[in-house]
Image 1 (cartoon, rainbow, N blue to C red):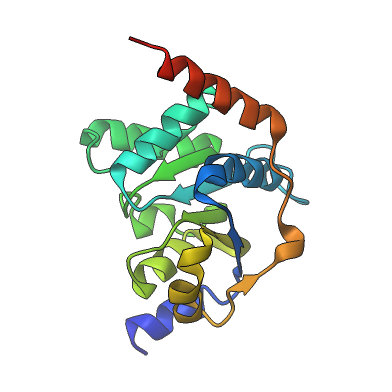
Image 2 (image 1 turned 180 degrees about the vertical axis):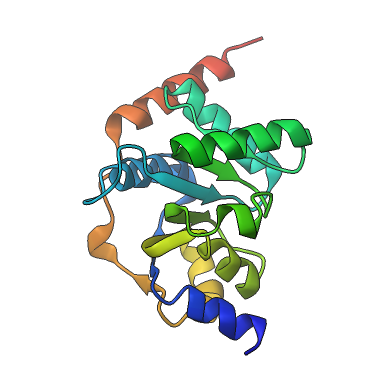
Length: 192
């Protein structure tokens, strides 16, 4: 069995779905999705939710935005010193919570099958990367792809035959978080 077939088999028990958000609502859409995943039926007190971003800078931006808005999250990416990466990984494994990552800094061996859900923000760089990231889900976990409408045609048909758009699962955006983000942006716009 080749690597692609093995990855597809290993991720076959993961429910895969995608949601569409506009560029200007992606931050709030992610927050809303993560809040709903934290309240999943059967979730442990602190479920492990892993969010992948296309770039290190995007990972840093989202982590900073969540922290400013009152929800600190862990993160791991290639610009961090190795000791900090290891500390973040250990904390995530031990305590759960939300981890933001830009690349495969988590290690397939140490992190596989520990997450209740994996979220991919935007297009993954390849089918292999998408499947590799899904492998962090525990059996019967969920994989979510949060994309813009223009990304839908080029990625959905190629990633997995089980990837389903579920418009009924789209949650209303969290208005309180959206207001905090707008206030934060206004404050930054007026900073000399």
